[in-house]
Image 1 (tube, rainbow, N blue to C red):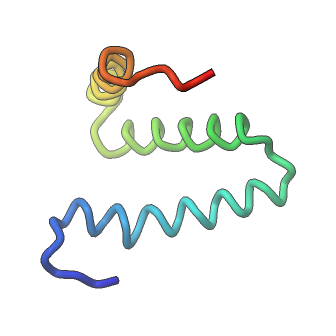
Image 2 (image 1 turned 90 degrees about the vertical axis):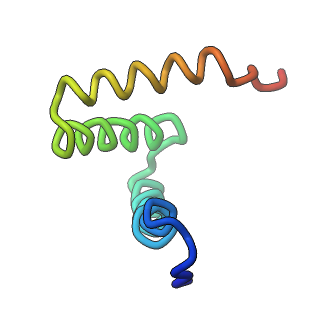
Length: 79
């Protein structure tokens, strides 16, 4: 999938990060990780990446903003 009409951030997401995350999820399953452990591991890695790319304070602000967005704009899943 090399569609030059897609915005660069979307291409990075679909061509770089998504395949890497899919491989990592497969590896985590072979270690016997539960869905909760896999999500926790992925979120910790994401947080670490934000700190590396943007610095600790910016990472905290970004994650707080994401949490506030999810809280305000995301419906609860069906029971």
